[in-house]
Image (cartoon, rainbow, N blue to C red; front, top):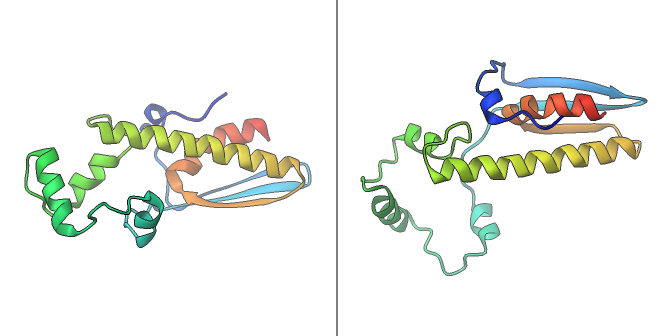
Length: 142
């Protein structure tokens, strides 16, 4: 079995927060899937290692207009959400978001499995969609 695909996930309706518990011998996995945050932070600047990149709002507006051919509208949250939504496949950004999310999900599942098999109980706090998509595989391997 593998992770639930985004195509499968689109057909799932769940509450948020989404929680589940898996018992594996004497150990447990407690999973708390919460609402995603899409707010950029200073950490994004630090982790990008783009020391010479202009992260100013004016520079971002220019890049946005050049790339999308429309003026930047900071109040159009739906545009930005749809742009990076991994359940959609309209843009290259959706595809990048989907692939990176799948990589993170596989890594997290492996880490949970590793620590449970080492005798630990694990508490996971992550996005609700990730919890839903990881649950079937976790139940199978634990």
